[in-house]
Length: 295
Length: 255
Image 1 (cartoon, rainbow over the protein chains, first blue to last red):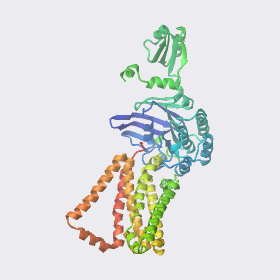
Image 2 (cartoon, each protein chain N blue to C red):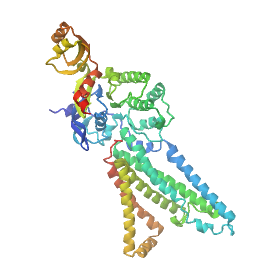
Image 3 (cartoon, chains in turn green, blue):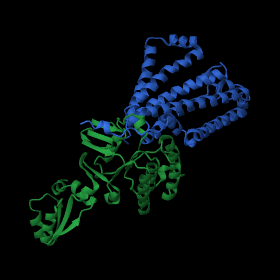
Image 4 (cartoon, rainbow over the protein chains, first blue to last red):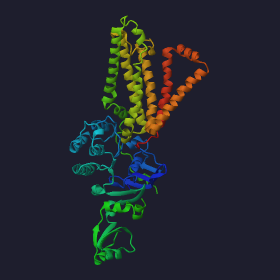
């Protein structure tokens, strides 16, 4: 265990709402984590707690062995630019980047400049006048160039065009290969980041429902496609995450299958399809039908 | 299960001085902190000067009584209120940002305090210099007064600068408390602050009036003189600085 952060039984209450509800996990050094979940699931709150920007109602948070709250030595090892980060009204990106060097000990101004050009970020435009994508680029550039040992990216893809997303992906991979550090990517655009992730944390309504290695997680579910009768016969008595049908055909997402079960499914005329991380998370965090009809 | 021992400790890097970082952050965009207020002051001064000019041209006595009248000028008061606003704005502008960059609330507050005190000092010195010019040019050639008004006594330019600095600090401290309350509790905090502040002022006046002590209060300040009275502001300034920190210490970056 090489934990850079440890969260133990943490709850954050806002009035009667548990934004984060009894969550425990660890972040290991040098890995890329995906913090996934729906809007309002508690992702940003959790990151605020980890970076000492908010106070936990219950539980313990340790980052680099200390509580991050008001601990300067811990905080300058972190970088967390939130998706809704508020910048001073009168600031332009160049002011943000100029001040960043005073705050982040590992700040690389040259790298930041290179990223500004690659992301085509206008540095002399009021932050307020930037597009959503350009605003995301500011956060992404700060996150990359700060080279903080523990970096949080909160919805880094929001509004970025396809080339910029690819650029982020490439630069992040290349940079962490050279200078290993722990990265937490929070997003609900899961397919976009799926290949980056080494470990997945899924949070739903404040509760941590998945804490698993990404490779392992990909094998935890399988989709079965085939004639409805054959599908239903196969899934009877199993844990079913989802079932869909059109006419005589059906698709069902079930839990991990053993080799024998796979063979059994094939013999029953069913086709096995992989379940993407996104599909899996959607199945795990989606509203059930009864919930949907109650709304 | 003792996993704490295996946790990765804080990497050994040089830790930047966050107080200094916050201090510099306030000045990173000189447009807001210097050029804009300078422009506004310049404009106010120009308008005052024009009014003096009109009076001096049109008055039958050639404006001889103007020096006496404009010494009660309140035009300079704008600068003090502006400093209050600047303090509130400075905190509202930069708090969430500095927190995002990993500043502790403590470092943020100290850096902000230092930046505001330095601003007040800068403006006070400018005010003092302009007061000297005003004296030397006999009221900008027209007998007008803006920077050497009656409120700051006639103990000489250095003393005047010192009094102005203290008064600026007082308004800055008010702004610091208001700004901290705003960052912590948004508008509600601000309203509560001005309500309490207003009640204190009214309560003080009522107390003096009801106990019939206006004369005593007057002679108290007369005895102290300008040199003795202005430093009394340091008491509310210190209280304000402490209150601001108390409010900010538990503020979060939630927007």
